[in-house]
Length: 447
Image 1 (cartoon, rainbow, N blue to C red):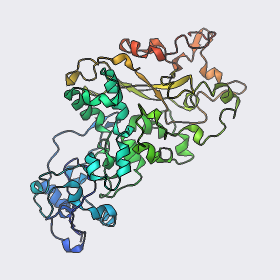
Image 2: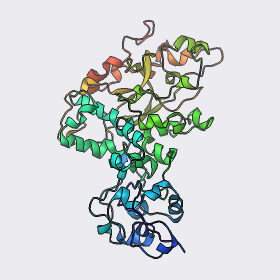
Image 3: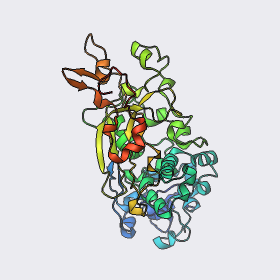
Image 4: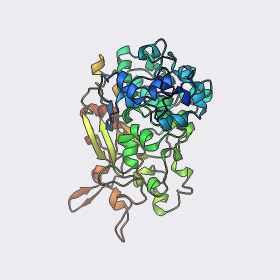
């Protein structure tokens, strides 16, 4: 017989975190639902009292999220609850994190007062007493949306992320409803599935110290990072760090980087904790003739990336990106030479920015859209030693795959580079500064 233990407070689409104030799990609670655990470990009772969803599942770059019924998202499985009951977070108790009222089977009463479905949304209060340093550092984490908020603020006529709160309330509302779908809280990585992964408890209410790569990391980083790393697009291969080394996201991306380390930086490439190829690959500069020639010219991905996913013009208008997803590969002038000074050229990826991103939220046009280019510095996670750029026929050099040249009246390899002619009219003023027009060797055709 399945124990019906004292269950944890939650609601539909809830990201349960730690649950203080809960009666300890034991067989004496079997047969009653008049408690937090009792409700949330009784599947039939959850089906009886659940509230149907009023909104469709969230969607984003990776498509529409998988759907879990509201009662499935808050159900404490027997095995999951037993495992959780042996942890320190369990000892904190249900209402210690979620507030509300224990000792009742009335859903309205249980979720009354100052009940909070997502305790880590107020992490300073609910998580900070035990994880003070992490909570404090996370305020400036890119996972907290700092980089994205910075760009929205700059294009809106302000100086950076510090000014994001000065935006009109309706624009912030639009950001929260759209851009913040992925940028989330502690619980989104360590307790529940992200919204784009379907939401709800991922494993009973157990806390995963290391997030699951596929169900957590890739659920949010689906169309770009995960899409590339796992070789999902036709004609691409999984990243060599996955196939040969078995690396997970956290192998390279440390907790200090993901949580933030207290540094307030303007964007993710400015983090001192960010991993670099040279951290593992020593003495690259002179390891072969091609590195010797290009090491100070190109970032590593220029030669070792496959084509990667792009899209553009955001999702805020309800119909998906107006520039649908497409595979591409573009070399441009390094857009961030102050942050990445070692490279003259880098790969770039089209952003989601468009002048009228916020039109549905009463901001017809960005006031300073041209302040930032519409292509970002890119480091695709689809690395191979041998790519269509590095493989050369016997007796030939790989320059044939990269240098713009003329052969039998045809201009070859021009499509690898970002020119002004590749830009849409509304992108020109913002982006022409990083295109390669006039910056390639004079002897190349179509320079």
